[in-house]
Image (cartoon, rainbow, N blue to C red; front, side):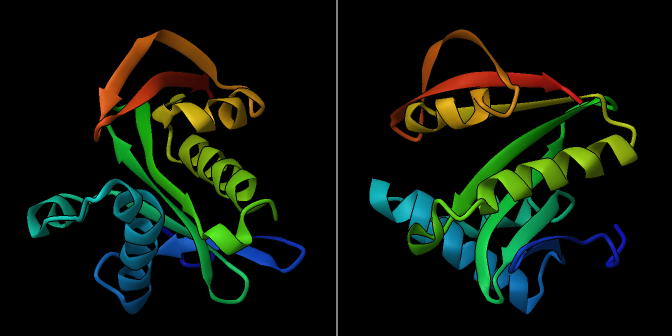
Length: 152
């Protein structure tokens, strides 16, 4: 992944995060704060170690305010996961920038489809970005989710 792969909109910059770097440690802190702590959960070392070959991205303004991970499922499908934007920065467009950046990156790497499991309160966000909901609601980390996909 090129360190030159950067997208900027206004004051928010999206760029790759190197696994194991100081920025990655900040990413894990942000994901814990936004996605895990409200559910009374933490990350295990094993969970984090499994992410070493995933693609990590961050939104910076200038500090890290958002992140997401792309995990290859097949040669053509990526799973978007762990999308998080700091509570104080929600509504600034960081989430949309992260998703758009990840889609451009995915196409450049030869992937043709993105899938994700969205918490129910996030489903409208993804629908607005062209994702299509499929299947029944299901439980993940103790709360309802919905599967969404998009051809990219």
